[in-house]
Length: 264
Length: 233
Ligand SMILES: Nc1nc2c(ncn2[C@@H]2O[C@H](COP(=O)(O)OP(=O)(O)OP(=O)(O)O)[C@@H](O)[C@H]2O)c(=O)[nH]1
Ligand SMILES: Nc1ncnc2c1ncn2[C@@H]1O[C@H](COP(=O)(O)OP(=O)(O)O)[C@@H](O)[C@H]1O
Ligand SMILES: [Mg+2]
Ligand SMILES: [Mg+2]
Ligand SMILES: [Zn+2]
Ligand SMILES: [Zn+2]
Image (cartoon, rainbow over all chains, first blue to last red; front, side):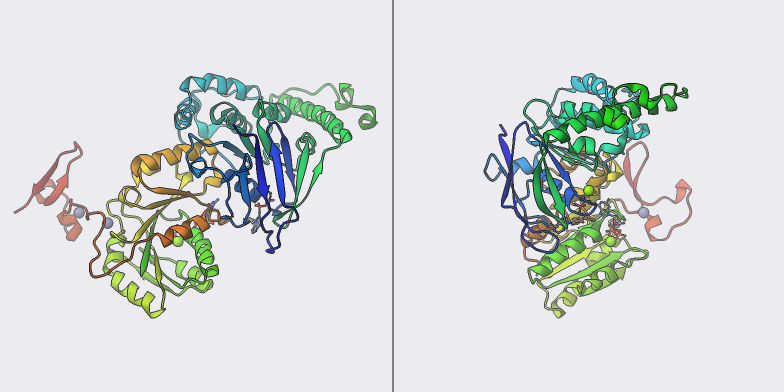
């Protein structure tokens, strides 16, 4: 079982040692990673994905339960403890959704009957239903992302989940994060999206390839996140109506979901 | 001398990954020479030279690029020796899916692009199945699920290879690849043998025949129904 992962400091892009010694993340925790483009967010996620042992460009070391992980854990997908979702990822394989999920279940040593469950979960995150006979390559951005989220939740089903900027995908973010963060998982989420960033307990601030500092989310910020999420849900609904050629009758501010300071 | 032979389909990311790996080797103060072999055109030798690596370039033109590499290995080794290099890296074209350019004691590195789809490992032939190290590139643009399927397919074709997931843009995997170079055996040009036999099916089209009617067919031929036969003297 994974109780914790630890990040031991490496070097930033200028070769300076990072400003922390060690960051420990415990099971059940959701951590954000924020910073401008090029600040090293993806590189940090990659270090964790590879369980870096001072053998990547950043010179960081990753520990599991306070110890150096078994090398097998780095390479064998059946033993892999880490699932990853990223913004650039697309489905390119020319096969049906069903065929693909079955193949992946086989690689991960999982039951191929999970397929229906995965598709159902994916369809709860997107406005455009996915069918199992659809070809992977025709899925829209939102459908692909939803399917990846559901695949990670049920087939990859790993105790550590890394999410790299999935925000602008047109899926229900809160629900996606909830689905991914099942019991006791460790989640690291790279994001520019205030809804996701403020949902986390702590966030790591990146600068020029290194960790600059780690800050804890305040009560105030958590409340704000809930409000922002309602606005986001509203947007998603309006978006679906527009897509289906409907007229939008209710105005955004009639929704009564907004707190007075936002509704002005 | 250690000889590293790197093969992979056009645009797979061979040069991009090697440039990062050569920087790692330069940081370790290793003296390395490089050779780029392609069929018709390349500028890769300039990319290697730009980062200070002495590099030779050769075009195989109408010869199988793998065979061309083998026939010119002696000169490549002389070139590396003249630069006092202890390691020679050869980037080849990998277009001939019947041949593989690796010799018994070189380190055979196959670079394969993960975006080409999960059936690619089944298609590319001996340069994958006889490699020591398989470098998967462009995993950054496909889902983790697809990466895992790709990896399984590679292991089906070459169960004992070492797989490195690399990224030619960020340099991911380059430190691991550089450490594999150390494990290469010592190469001796006089005693070295090819790892994978040259293709058995050679026909008269290979040597200039242009008439297509079946009465002119000569050589070791394979029919569309799967039968193979020899026609000739
Ligand atoms: N997204 C992504 N692009 C990559 C990666 N590796 C290489 N590329 C890009 O792929 C293209 C081809 O890379 P090269 O290194 O020139 O490929 P090559 O195998 O040396 O090609 P030839 O020598 O011409 O056969 C370039 O535009 C690279 O930037 C990778 O890991 N991810
Ligand atoms: N500590 C570091 N040392 C050297 N290079 C780094 C470091 N951190 C990041 N990089 C490089 O900087 C570039 C941008 O980093 P990336 O992680 O993609 O940024 P972001 O995801 O924040 O946009 C990448 O090529 C990456 O490999
Ligand atoms: Mg990034
Ligand atoms: Mg090249
Ligand atoms: Zn050939
Ligand atoms: Zn022929």
